Amino acid sequence: MAITIGTKVKGKLGMGIITKIITKSTGYVQVDYNGILKNEMAFNLTDENGNDLKKKPVTETSGMSNGEKKRFKDAKSIAAFNTMPNLDKIKREIMGINGLVKGDRNSMHYQLISETLAGIWLKAKDKGDLKIQNIIDSIEKFMSATERQAWCVANFADQNNIKYKE
Image (cartoon, rainbow, N blue to C red):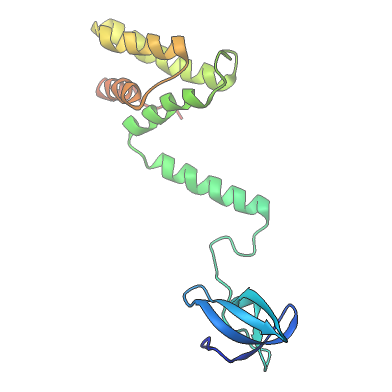
């Protein structure tokens, strides 16, 4: 049903009349409830016959509980991660060091990142690449990595067939 000015509607405060259309696309309207002006979303209103003024927006997670929504979101992000190229996966893992508490070298997440970096460092040592060794030493020392450092290390790993461990 089209939203028009002057339409009689039923909302939270009873019967009212639409006096102003604030946004047509989302259906945000101003309703006059016997002198009380209130802004309402059109999908919360019904016309005189009891029909919805506007259908409620439907999302992928409509009707799901909060736990189901979280699992759905997690599954989507895992699927997106699994389709990434190897270089991006390694870079993202290295950048994960920035989200850790500084100085907490006992956390499991830090240990996993450190293990990955150690493997790349050993490969760089075998190849004689001091630049990559120094970058990894810096990342380990300060528990922080810039985008550029992460890309350099990930690019080296990718070029030397070091695969992201899943």
